[in-house]
Image (cartoon, rainbow, N blue to C red; front, side, top):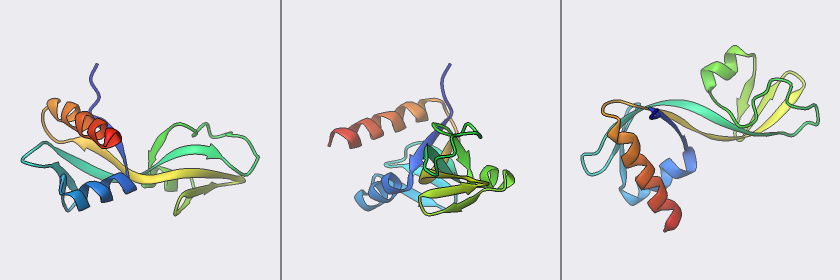
Length: 118
């Protein structure tokens, strides 16, 4: 099974924009040159629970849109989410959903691999 969504950290998107590897047009991120497009939704990737209350919401290791976090009555604030008595360290970014062929995910994976290596 191939994936059609990927989490993109804000820091990575900013770097790719600065390097001219991607174009951002509204809520669409396009790989350059003339690569596939991804529809972006603001999201967070949950790293750890930091308040000592345990991960009762079972969010660590998961990616949720800001809309989903808000629906859980959570508050997102620059690198953290507060949800009831729990506080989580998160990575701010985007959930990118492929807007076209499945080959686009493979192209993005190659771009991410190239970025990690160089």
